[in-house]
Length: 43
Image (cartoon, rainbow, N blue to C red; front, top):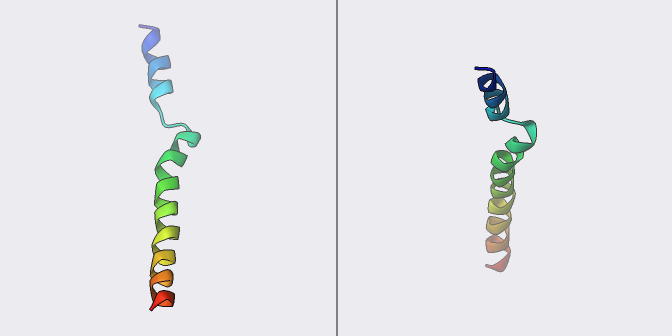
């Protein structure tokens, strides 16, 4: 089948699709320390 290789090529992760995995992690790491800092300052 000639279609199968092209289908598998499209299934391989695109570098831009990695942003959807990495971005939430980065945002989480940035927000958590900010919340701790805000809690310390409000005390």
